[in-house]
Length: 477
Ligand code: UDP
Image 1 (tube, rainbow, N blue to C red):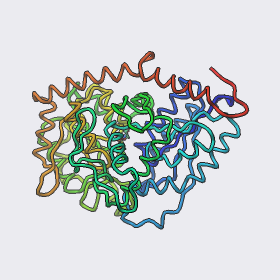
Image 2: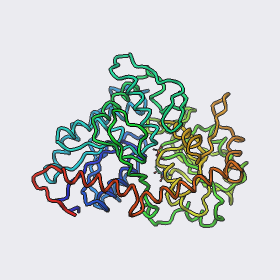
Image 3: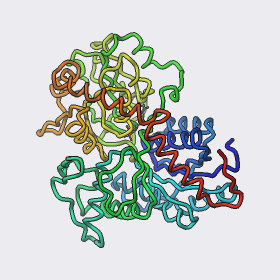
Image 4: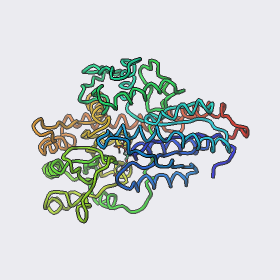
């Protein structure tokens, strides 16, 4: 295990694999490169599906000398059944604070505490940092425009309360030339009358009490928010996904270089049955090779995430591939592979056969794609993904965005086939491919041994170690 005298950082990851994975990578690096000890704390699972993947991430962390701790389940029966996922997350976190306090006391009794690092959804933990006299840093591994949106919403609503919240302007101008239309704002920020909006403003107000943000890039303007330390991107290496044989990789090994379109919607994104059929037809019509990670369709006819509480049918209905259109697998055999549920994504993206990524624009997936030099077709579904898609397609230039059909709200097969062809073969696609290559080089440099991100994290870690509180404090190097 870690040396007991090492100053100890406690990291708090809000529920969901997309939140856990980058924080796990931060914890691993703090222990491996910066002579700190770390405990990564998770909340009780709110997903309807057992999250086997998160379990694997946590056990690989323990193998890397990072301690892990899961807080006990908390009652949620007071919530309305249609509560938004963001509300559920914030409730779980808020109600778990007494358990987290007990855990921090425990850790603090055996090691000097150096810092408390909740992610951007878990800032209800920040008051514990002041209670214990340690700095609280917010882990914000997201698009910086997301931080700007929170900042604008908080400023606009400073002093507001009890139903008096004001809507953000439409469109919302943001630093870096980004202009967001209301429909592209992150979920929860579109309508000030939704209960979750007030929750998010509270969350944003707590940002002001932090000592700093750990994030990907330096923010353009901070207002009354604390300084941001650019220490990312936190992309795990493909070797961290295990060298075990995988049907995806074995299949990619047999495909020509730069020929395959990878299709995946993250750890929680789902499509309706109708939308799944359009995607299948679009991939077939594109004429290109594809590797499609198929998740269970949402049965309510809408795009959504499956962290909510949905019931599933039994038997064959539990096989995602059983929901693909009749005959699709036969008609595309040899040219496409459909795999249920999960792929070793970093290995897939860094495989020489992979040329493009049809992505839901989750921020981890985005960074993984850019780090591998793979351009994207942007297909945002929920949370802050529409905003990411705007930034990636209109500002950064590493993605082509798909448009939904106004009549039925679906992305049509023609749109999908055309975007895939454009990205793989077209002139606009060429510009996107070139731009992605440029950004890949910049990302490589940031985490090179003397890169800017690594040096910044060393600086922050040094400050934490120097201020660590505890009787047994000894500087280890
Ligand atoms: N992921 C994976 N295999 C899959 C689906 C997802 O390894 O089949 C990983 C992906 O590499 C990323 C994370 O799960 O690190 C998903 O995070 P992201 O922010 O992209 O989306 P979210 O799941 O939060 O919507």
